[in-house]
Length: 233
Length: 288
Ligand SMILES: [Zn+2]
Image 1: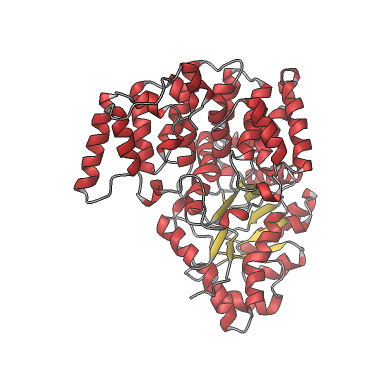
Image 2: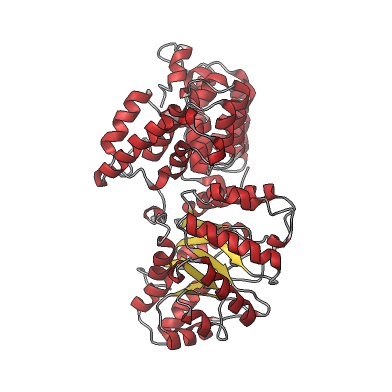
């Protein structure tokens, strides 16, 4: 979903109103100064911008509804500029609204320094336990493609099929599903259950099953770098 | 059948306690937006963490559920008066400033009095101050018991708070409290219940006397005996009593939009049955 950050920023700025662009510049410059904030003085300014982005980041009329979501993009850029440590990232997620949590998940592969893997995966797993499809989709982005263990990743795929998240939202599907016999078994069982209940089998299931059985191989092998960049979506 | 142009904004309803059937029936009755105030769950909470989970729900899961039924969901956050009396819950007051910044929060509430204790005095004053500093309106619950005295004391505290009356809604009013409430300049909230507290016909009589300005009508539906379609019933009763569609639209849409709009955070553009990402069946299907 997210192209590298420079083009994400350029694309976002082109879509914003003049006021929103001025806000974004302020937010990013205050985020760049994040290290200088005295915690005793309450929420750092960049965090306030991150939280209130939904009512500041307005797009021009003709840009409404286009993707990627401008508020998500602004939050990812702010978070990247603030370069928070792992504890701060986790706290932001835990005290965040669903929209803020989604932005944290989308930002995970872009953060520098990268968050500690165990803590970041904890956030991905938290999102995968929800039934909010926007969180589930965001959880299965490039970070999960690169780091989530096989068992959890397979359950994530099944959850997408259960909750109606198109598998196109899953980064790295082709490469992680390819030749995954256990995933194939899970998908076949699920298809059988649906059929027994007289219900249609989701179209996406067939696609994933063909990948898992190796009936459909990717056109080219992907390097881990491709996954980390989120080139799938 | 409601007219195809009818739009209803329920300014006070606890959807956490309601089913998806309610969401669907509300949409069919014309409800396109609502505000869910944080309140007591019917069972006392014993720690601030319970509040944070509840706030998460009002800032994530409920808006998600509502959107799947074409309804825009906003919330008000606060420590409610009943639980302001339990010292175990008080630390939530220290975390509220952070939560009150959130995009979906359109007021501080429900605050006010339950049993009119000193602890309730403290929590009410502290949260009115939070409303002032966050530039948010306040949704003030008037007590169900000893209502007239409770309202008088509430009005005293409001005067001291420095919050302009136009930023305050006094809720759960009835025939005996509407007079002093109207004189205060605050918004006038009426909760319509299936029992005797306040019904659609009595609401219409109050509208005849006091007019349609600054009046908010809500169902206050929750886990108790209540009905999420009471707003629509009031609309019907208004038309039957000779009010016109514009009066109905003022009371049931434009007034709540004006009141909560003071927050600058209402987002009503998402109310068309939403083309949101992965519109879904995670709820239609009833969980996993
Ligand atoms: Zn209530």
